[in-house]
Length: 269
Image (spheres, rainbow, N blue to C red):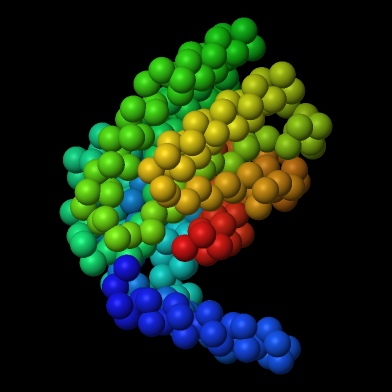
């Protein structure tokens, strides 16, 4: 941790105690993170696919100005900000092409990764287009991958981050459950399929949280902030299948980024 951040943290801690005793409120939440160098890594859930307002310079990575890393930057004004998260990224893409901005001065890193490795896009395509039994079989294959292969791939990414940014606080963000069971959807997948997809998301999150903890990283669980805002809820912060823009299917909306991801990241940063 850089000295400037340590001083800022100590000052804000003292101020917070004093204000708590007097009943006053903090004037600016951003004051406590001045001096922070922040790098945002990961896949489409971090790049902001589904939120719109994409930076044309990011091309196929589809980095959105409404993604939680950009929203956190706007609220907290870190000293530097690098945004390399990319739509479709798997763990090897992160290690091969996203770690350039990391260095010994990096204070804060965010990342969501692992869903594409586990084949969740193919899971959803299979479940939407094929039979219930085929859907459940594909989900079982994804869960087996999470057991056998994903932990080692996450270890590779997390170790690479630590090697390049040894002083950084790293926040690993998980994935929401897609469906509200017993919700308002009257067509599409069966409740059995929806429950199995939700369970698989929980399974992926649990495996990711374990690997993050073993590396000394924080894990941000977004399932609670998305509760009540899943598909079939009537107030969804996730896109359902969109045949006109298939890439945005099952991704957070702008409200999902600001209301689902940003508060969780902010609480861990």
